[in-house]
Length: 549
Image 1: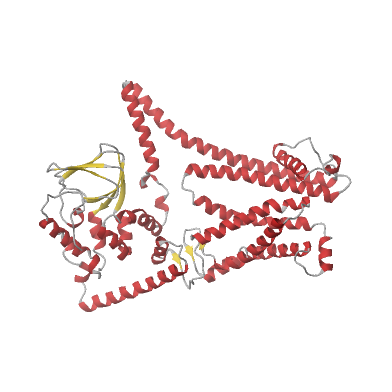
Image 2 (image 1 turned 180 degrees about the vertical axis):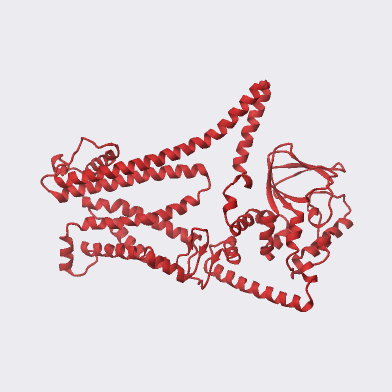
């Protein structure tokens, strides 16, 4: 057994009274954390284990946090945001269509009530929505959430919701005073006032950003950006088209483009499609099929042309940028392959070997995309260390579940394993034929390996051979004793290994006190060495040795 595991260094350096005090403080702290985690889990069952760990790490500002505060990353919060997106899209489509005086059916009446009730409820719910701040910290303090909402969207929500209910009163569906209803109906700008409700699109930006952050593929993100620009152009054209018709019928009922071009007695689809064609043509300089007839229409046409010119230039710039990024993503790999081909040709490599090399290079590029090494991510070191610790813990802790003792150790001492995952673990990509270690080799530095993907072949010095697959641990003995490899490990296919630095693992673990005898690494190390001595079969770097703990 290595010297680090022969005694619990934390306990040996403390007198009995001090050890008792440390144990009491540890138990008390664990009780507080357990109570907080239990309360959080019992009232928000959708939150998974990594979110509970945020509380212990201080990445969530709880303060006087209560169970009624909605975590921003739960499924329930995502559902509320999705419903709000649907409601905004409904308003975006049907509010401008109000200029056409469509016959109201049961669906429209139902949706109008549903939209008003939802936004009124959402205004109250905003006082209880947790926040994700710009630095990645999750804010769950009720007082902070309330102050931030009052300073940002509260006044806006009050104004828009008031207009919603006033519009309902003017329509007569809500009952109320008849004379007030008639006076509201006589107000010619009431339909234009309804457009203020479209300002809720400003809040849609936050929801779209959250959806974009959940997309992992860079290609899909670029396609999402392009689609977002196209949909925005169509939405703006829809609003401009409806307003173009509304201005015509409200400005001069006898002299407007609807009367002049004989669109007053045609079906809704015909007049709307012509108005939409006119609006879309403003992004390209206008159309001669229909033109402004009176002063109000000309003034609106001038404004639309200016807005369309600016918005069109902006959208074209965004589309060009997105298409350029797509081209760059494809051209980088093409340029590298072209350089390799040029090198092979200059050195007169045979055609058969050149084909094999190019295929292997293309495969290597694909593997790099699928298994990107951490060193290639230049922005990651700029992220705060607590967040990087959380990233590494979520990356590596599931891999440790394949080892029975380490799996339980992760659950019992997560604060220890967070540091182990951050400081002692890393990934390595292998190509077919790569040798991980040779028989008789004393590892420097000593490491334990976990197969993440692929297949490796192992041949011991005793002549035994076997394949190693996903989830298997290799060279566990480096953690607990002085180890010399008794076989050779080689990659059969493209593979990915997780490496656990044994020296760093011991250095971190021995800094913490272990009161749980079931998951005490010192006891496990002694049992591991005892199992090796008592084993009847030959030693191996592969798992299979039963170790009691």
